[in-house]
Length: 155
Image (cartoon, rainbow, N blue to C red; front, side, top):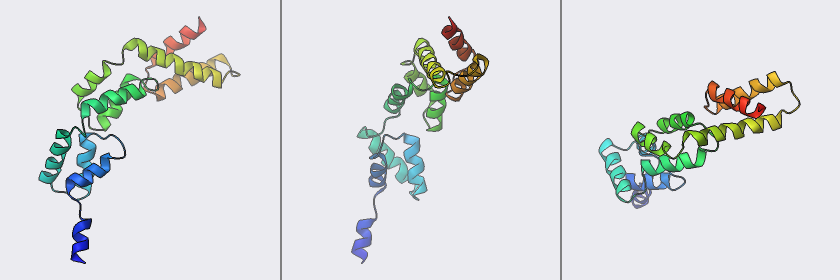
């Protein structure tokens, strides 16, 4: 019986490896996960260092991949907030957002606004404009950006 229990107890590294096997994770997410499993601080750091050494976790890569995946759906501001929530440092986020220039953000906003117009084509223009502004605000775009999209579509 003792032999079986010993086999069931995983090392912090194995626990972390299992956690990151499902999807890419940040260093902060892995630290929180291991802490929630009752792993000691020193063991958490050792596991993180080993994961970094093997390049299994990399916050820079995570941020770049996240920006690439969401730049057609969200504003740069919303992407930044989501990355901060996942524990990514501000300077890493800044570097990753270089791949999301302002003109692409405007194109994304315009595309989202056009999809709102298609969805609500039968309502009054004032109500439609409000829906566009709300939809873009929900994706993190500013009011000014929403107004520019509306003006662009009217022309």
